[in-house]
Length: 222
Ligand code: SAH
Ligand code: DHB
Ligand code: MG
Image (cartoon, rainbow, N blue to C red):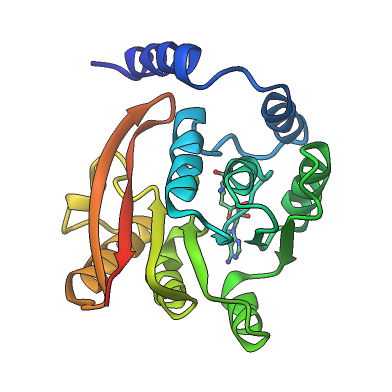
């Protein structure tokens, strides 16, 4: 089984369940056109995040890692009326492209993009009483996954949902001998999850046009 087949199945699913959306298409085109890496979530994962936020009835969402704002827009569209989304991005060019995309999606008033390294902007967010967030999506530098997860718990409430992207990395996550710092970041996150009594979590493997990867879903239960 190949990535070609996974991509064909993704197209088939999207063709029926994730209808063409001129705004999201323009957002992808603008991000690609500006030379951003093509690593945004797939459309069907974007819709999954949207559905999770809908199920959660989210009014406040936090995202770590904006890129061009593709996943951000999916999540923001799920907010209840008057809801807000805060998204954290370290790269000024990504932030500029994302802000233009939020305007394009008519979500500039709903999405608050904070430029800076997340480990620096998260304490500011806490100090200003930014939480609690109903849903937190972690999708930035994988080396800091465990630190971001600790911050997510801190900015959450009982019943909050935390999603972490890219936690399988072509299966390398299960290689105890890995030296890839991004994979080691995911393994540290898993060790944290294994001994963190406040959350219940599971991880799903995914195959699609981006290859073989997966995501972790956690509920702040305690
Ligand atoms: N969530 C996006 C993809 C994010 S890609 C989507 O699916 O559409 C990861 C992003 O995290 C990149 O834009 C990268 O610049 C950003 N990033 C990397 N290190 C960061 C850090 N320390 N703080 C905040 N953002 C960071
Ligand atoms: C990478 C980052 C992502 O967030 C993603 O979804 C895919 C790949 C990366 O840095 O390679
Ligand atoms: Mg990702």
